[in-house]
Image (tube, rainbow, N blue to C red):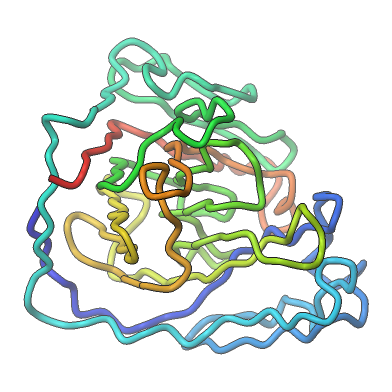
Length: 291
């Protein structure tokens, strides 16, 4: 694959699904329910974080500071050359229902149009989604290579396209290619399991802003996973790249990842107007190994 690197300003954003130690969601619109725990340090360019509380809940990670680092500069000009082999991968075009994304949940998944799947949700609905089944073993899903989704979305918080741990255990290596802030800004997030003195660990993450495109229109989003490097693309233009917290795939001692999409409403109702349809439509998805 040859991808042109887009000249875009670096932005910062973050994932909003704060969770407590027992993985129940916490209020995050007014700060109610948050205590005087570790300070939340924000470094952002052009993003509105005024709605966030000043502190993280103590039981989430006592004594640990969570922060969003300044994003690395995105290179301008030139190209990124990576060889992938589509002949050894797979493509799902949804001509016969969910196809490979056969784990389906919630009431909002619509297969009525041939060649696409739309997930609709409103603020009063529960979550809905679909994914390649992570069967609980580290070799399920796919390893290093190029994951891709062709999507159109409502561009609202709660919509996501991601790859999920093949072991189906979280916290772990969850890579969110596409999410949205309450203001409708697109971003990607890398999650990993951080140590906190318990076997379960805690969810840690870094996020990377994306700009310069209209997410309500159809675009192809691609996540390139190589040993020691992750890069995100929209229509072949690089949005971000990092060598930090890159997980290992199964062949290299880690676990594979399973592609999916969905709409979550359980933790973000306060940002969605009642009755407004939040949606994501997928037209094709795929994975190709590095050739």
